[in-house]
Amino acid sequence: MALAGLQTDLLPDIIIWDEELHNWEIGTTTSSEPPAGRLAIRFNTATANIGLGNLELIGQSPSGGGQPVNQRIYRSNGTSWQRLAGTMTYHAGHSHIHFDDWTVFRLRRVLQGGGVGEVVRTGQKTSFCILELRTYNSSLPGYNGTPAYNSCGNVQGLRPGRADVYSSGLTDQYIDITGLPEDDYWLEGEVDPDNLVLEVDETNNAARIMVRIGTPPPPQPDPYEDNDTKAITDARTEGAAFSPNLGLINSVKVINGLSIEDSADWYRFRLNQAGTSSDFVKVASSQTIGGDLDLQLCNSSGTVIASSTSTQNTETISLNGRPAGTYYARAFPKSGTITNYTLTIDPAANRPPTFNFVTPAAPGVWTERAYETVHVTWYGGDPDGDPKYVSFWIDRSPTTGPTNIPLNGYQGIPGNDYFANLNTAEMSLGRWYLQARATDGGAETIKWAPGWFTLYVKGDVNFDGYRDLLDWRLAEDYRSKPVNTYPEGWATILDIDRDGDCDQYDWKAFATSVGKE
Image (cartoon, rainbow, N blue to C red; front, side):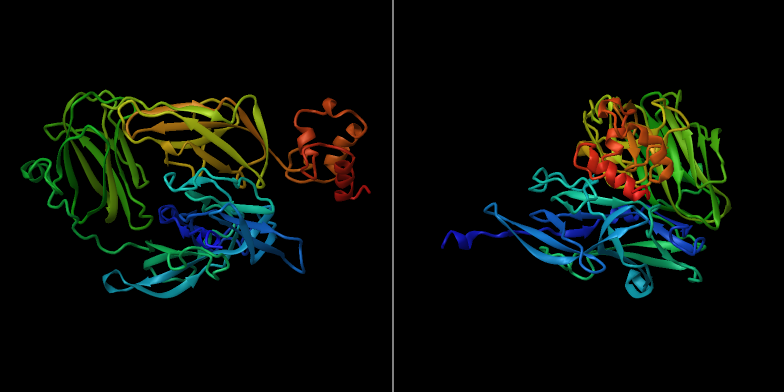
């Protein structure tokens, strides 16, 4: 009896990962969020488990309009118990079941001094298929525990250190801002707002970031002022705190929170090696209204040697072939004012990181879109010991070029995560090849996975996104033939009941679903 008293529940602790909230934009509602075309703020959502144990949610037999869900609580002695924890519902926009009322998002007023005011707009409570898509913290105990949660079936969840990510383009990732006055607001996300899940801490379920809706306010001097001219910048102490005379840059330098409240900002820096094709100077602003930010690169005498003056507020100048020496970055508004921008100087002197895929392995994998994820694993490092970040891209052929598509939510992942599960809900059907771009902030390594992944819908042999009579007419001649004579992938596509084989029960279900039986 004394030993039994020492057993403890290993509870999860779910939070909103505020870093992902910074991936927001002003956009509109889509056709799956009728009425389409309403002005909206769209954002990424990530929920992470920082607790001692797994979040595990198990769908039960449907009852009435929903599917009851039990939460399994694991204990320190290896046993577990279950409790009722809400419902799951089939989500037509995503084509799989979701755990209901998982997140809610609000816009709040910003009070004087940065305080948090009342709610002015609220998005609808959002249901999620909860599964492991990213690493939040691989050092947490239980990170590599079991089981894993990699599909949108009846068992969903997160192990400690894992996170689920929904990108801004997915259905319901928005708050309607039609008619909302221009101002700064707090964008606030809360996970499990109804406290359906039993967890360690119910007080850390919300996170918020400040966003700007509308024309920005007048710019204010930033800590690097005064740096309006070359002469002023030259006179500042090299390398001192908040000095625009930055000194030697031999690793990536990023300065946030800058503004231009006069004609220009000058930054002096030195390079100790010639630049390569991976090296650059960049200014970027998330400001969408009221100003056009441009950039010039000047030599040691202040003469302009390169410019980037697009109509966008991200401007990049390559350092490729620029010899070692002194340079200046000059940021200036072509029009309007710039209230918030970031300066990045990415020099030479970095050897490229190493990167090698483990999965998807050759020849490839068949993956049910919106129901399964693509499991990606890798290994590698950086010869200089610099932090490495990995971004994933896809294409219809394994050729690097302008047709490569960046995967939203999978850019700048820490290289030592060594895994990511790609959410397939936003991808088109068919065969894809996966590219990784690994960088330490300077040099970049690009690799293609040895295996493809092909996205499909059950019963949809013509890959038009629907299981219907057209598919039946294409497939019915194979009903009496051996499975090994089916076209590539059909045995998987026609495994309607997902039991690992294609048999008479699948054909019967197929026929029933398209009205043939």
